[in-house]
Image (cartoon, rainbow, N blue to C red; front, top):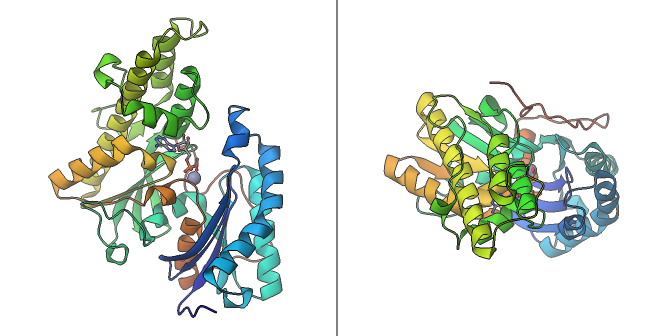
Length: 359
Ligand code: KG4
Ligand code: ZN
C-alpha cells in the first residue's frame, strides 16, 4: 500500500457528459485519475443528451473508482473525505455523482464535501501538473487574492478570488458562454461537437485577417462579454445572410473562419481579464474551464502577462476541461476549513457562484 500523509480526497465529477474520478493528496498531488468520456457518443447528436449522459455515469462510476484505487495502490480505508460536484450542471448527471458520494461517505464514515464546479475550475491552479509555462509559478506558491476567469461550455465569468472557493462575481457574459459559442460556431462550419477543440486545431493553419468578426463590448470599459452576435456573424460569413444556405466556404475558407472566430473570442477574454485585474489592482490572474485549453488564449495571455509583469496561473490542459482532480483539490480546501455537507445534500442545476448575471 502507498503511504500518504495529509488529506487524501476522492473527487467525483459528473456534472455534464464526462464521468471522472480522481485521488488527490493535499489539494495538489494527483495520485490517480480516470475518466469515462461520452463525447464520441454525443458527436452524433450534436450535443449532450442529459438522460443518456446520466445513465452512462451510473454504469461508469464503480469501475472508475476501482481503477483509481488500484492505480494509487490505496484501499478505501485511506480516504479522508469524498468530494463531489454538487452544482451547477445537468441535474440527472449531478444526482449520479452525489448519490455515489453519499453511499461512500455513509459506508466509510468519512465526510462528504459539496463542491461548486465553477469554483473547482479555479482551484485547478493548485494541481501539481499545472502548466510550468514561462509565467506560471509552482502550485504551492499561489498567493491570493487574484482575479480568475472561468471560460467553459456554460460559463464565461470573471471573479475576485480571496482564497480557493472564496470568490465574488465581477462580470461575465450576458448571453452565450465562450465554449458554447465555440460549439455553435463549429456547428455552423460543419465541424463535430465539441467544437472548441476542432476550431482551435483548424485555426492553427488559418489566417485570422481573412475573416474579421466583431468583438462585442471590447474597449467599452465594462466587464461584460457577449458572444451571441459574434456567433451569428460567423454563421452569416459561412452561409450567407439567411444563415440556412449550404456552407459556402472551401477548406481554406473554413480554416480562416476558425482563425477569425478564435481571434475574436480570445481578444475579448484577454481584454476583460486584464481590465478586471487592473480594476482590482491584482498582480495575479488565473484562467480555468475548457476554453482555457485554447492554444491562442494560452500563448497570447502568457505573452501579455509577461509584458505587464503579472503572474498567470493556467492549469495544464487536462485540468482545464472537466476533470475530477479539480473537484478533489477544491474539496481539500473545504475539508481543511470544515465545510462539510451531510447526507441530505441536494444537487442544484444552477450554481451559487456563476449564475448568468446581468451586468
Ligand atoms: O469546462 P468544460 O470541459 O465543461 C464545462 O464546464 O462546460 O468546457 C467545455 C467547453 C466546450 O464548449 C468546448 O468546446 C470548450 O470548452 N473547449 C475549447 C477548447 N477545448 C475545449 N474551446 C476553445 N478551444 C479549445 N481548445
Ligand atoms: Zn466545467
